[in-house]
Image (cartoon, rainbow over all chains, first blue to last red; front, side, top):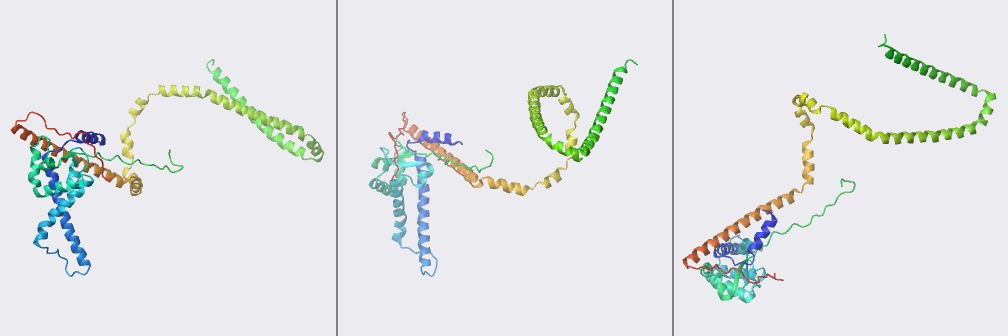
Length: 171
Length: 194
C-alpha cells in the first residue's frame, strides 16, 4: 500500500471515537505489557542482587501483600505515565488510539490518575459501556470527561537522500 | 571490331598513362641524383648560397599555398557530406535487409557459441560483490520490512474498526436506535507534551 493511501485512511479516522472492540483488544495488549514489565522488574532485581553478592539466582519470594499490590500499582503508574505524556499506551499505539479530554486536549495528571485507578479496578466492566454509549464512551470516560480517539499517525516520509557524485564519474 | 574500339582506346590510354608516370618517376630520381652531385662541386657552392634567400621566400609561399589548398579540400569535404549521407541512406533503403535476415540462420550461429565456456570466463562472484557493494541492502531490507509491518498493523486496525461497527450495529438495533452514533470529537487537536 502506498504512503499516500495510508495517509488518506489515517486522515479519515483521525479524531473519531474508537469502539468497544478496539479498546478491549488494546487494553489486553496493555495487560500483557504490564505483566512483562513486572516480570522484567523482578528478573532485573534478581540479577542485580546476584551480581552484588547473592548466592543463588532465583526470583525473590515476595509476601502476599506485594503479590496482590505489585501488578495494580505498576499498571496505574504505567497508564498515568502514558496518558499524561503521549496519550498512548503500548496497546493504544498499536491500534492508533489516543486518550484525550472531551475537548480534545491532553489529559492532566489528576484526571489520568483517577482514570487509571478506575480502569485497573473496574476496567473490564466500565469499558463495556462503550458498546452501549451513543458516543462510544466507557463509564470512566463519562465520569472523567475523556474520550479515546483514533489517531493514526501516517508513516513518516523518508528523509531526503543526498547523493554525492564523485568527480570524473558519469553525470 | 567496332564494339571493341572503346575498350581498346581505354586500354591504350591507361597503358600510355602508366608508361608516362614510370618514365617521369625515373627521370625525377636520376635528375635529383645528378643535381645533388653538381651542387656539391666547389664552383656551384658559392652561387647556391646567393640564391638561398629567394628560394626561402618561394618555399614560404609554397607552405601558405599548400595550407590554403588543405583548407579548400576540407571545406569541400564538409560541403559534400550531406550529399554522401543521402546517397548512403538511399543505398541502404534499397537493400532488402529483411530478406537478407530471413536467409541468415541465427539459431545455427547461436548453436555454435560455447555458452558454458563464455560463462566460465565471466568472473561472476566479483560482479556480484561489486553490485552488492553499490546496493544499500540494509536500507532496502529495512524499507521493505517496515512496509510489511505497517501494512499488517493497518490491516489489524481496520479489522478492529469493522468489529467496532459490528458491535455498535447489533447494540443499536437491539436498543432500536435510529440515529448514528456521535463519534466525532469536535475540534480534536492533539498538542504533544513538551
